[in-house]
Length: 180
Image (spheres, rainbow, N blue to C red):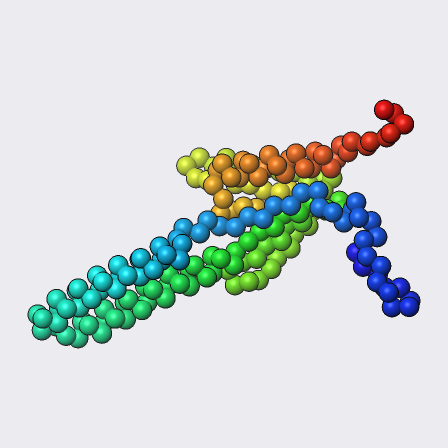
């Protein structure tokens, strides 16, 4: 928190205990290809296209060369766009100051923030037969899905960590030196 003083000085950290997050998790989708791997795929696509283009050219079907070049450009452009879009997707879950905040960024860099009162928030891990389970945060009639791109094991791990953090928030342990 920041407040300005009448003489222009900034007062920061009014309550450092409340400002520090009790829990913070950043989830991102799995990036299946490395830059080197994508170069290998591009090389394979170009090589395959070149071999087929030469074959059709020798058979007299030279107009195919233009279409093969267009397909290569389209495939490589889509691979690059998918990698760039999926790198933008992120979800930050923060428990701080009595609020449980879910801050999402989609593939177009649009942000959506959903906040819950941490005291009332519940973590629900709903099994779905034949599909990946669903992880939701719910409080007072509102709910939102989190970690939609995570695997079952990752969702279970995130749910356990969130439940522990919420339990620690609701049942704080006070250290009183006089009671030692």
